[in-house]
Image 1 (cartoon, one colour):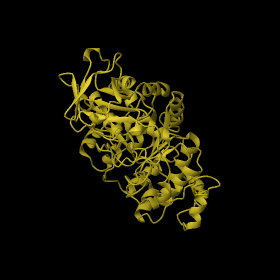
Image 2 (spheres, one colour):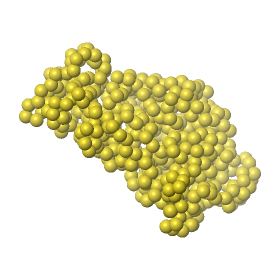
Image 3 (spheres, helix red, strand yellow):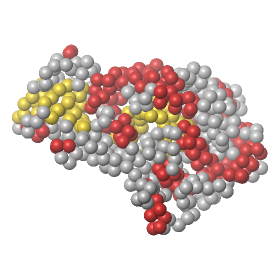
Image 4 (tube, one colour):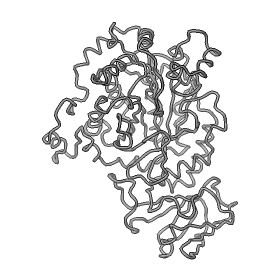
Length: 528
């Protein structure tokens, strides 16, 4: 059977943007023959669909995008529509819910959770000759054991989507993003293009995406999906790659049908793309997909996407930028961005051998939240569930402690905007946010241009001063104008006393023993 006629779904996607040694096409053929028993029937369906236009409402990349085409997409009689060009797509305002949300939970869960060793890149690194993984396999599993044999062991027998959603809600999350497919190609939903390599056909025998989406929404949070564009050992993708991506059989027959199924069936509020870095956006048909999402999909008014849509696209195009894994520049950015980071500092997927010293402390976790939001970003906090479908107690403890902190100090995080200053010039342990009177969807991270547009300023201190006196420079001018009073969130009582001396504000904090927050503290500067 021709390689292009075999349909494999075996790869892995995480938030890892790096190169690893891949396996050979011969390995992929064996994989395909092993995974799919009904390849011939599936092939007929693929052939029947190859002549279909994936996004019939948008021009294809073969069509010339002329001035008349763009005019059609920006017709004043039907409202704003977007042409499949970055110059048009980049004019879409950011949906307000995302900027207000600030805090999300990221879940890397899949077949790689069964070995639970190394990282979610287990299969690729194993095939690449990683000695630690080879030694692990030789000691733990019988000779000849394959990655595909992990799938039946991925049972998720204790998976309780309602318990997960309740935990994330208590953690203060406003949205949840689940890996619908990682680079190994295993889908967590009944993909019509992934026979025998999805969570309904093998392993849990459940529609993980569907069940979690419902539970998350029942707990008043938004639901989103992560989806890897490429698959390590999909022979159709490998054939396209061999042809220098001049043919696009894989996006046409696999990627976009899967994404359309996800969008139409589950209506995600976030589409978090990954696995794009080997080809340009023209191969992935990225602009056509986004034009369909923004113009005609069932989530066109709400969905947000990240920036991983092909070589050269990250940090340049998308509703929000990731730029890189664990991206936290520490300075104000001129475009909405997101800091996706892991509670386990070594992996996105679950590791059975993780050590306590490798887990972010609650102070480190809160610092990521505070510094990110101050500079205009959202945080997407990743944890890896176990193969049984449980969340490790250490992850639960970190999330619940964060939720307790947000229950006291969340006013300084949610619904805020960057202020004129982010990190105090005098005190590096203090970060600012503010409330603005109006939302600007085209420039959500822009600082306020007029003091009258800022009814509230917040200063979040990560370290309590030894003498109970907080020294700040950047807020001194506002205080000097005499228009603000200062309160500490979570503390009942009168406003705090303060004075200004030589351009420095000295704020007298309350007795620390009377303060409910234990890890970081937020001051509210309220206009009188």
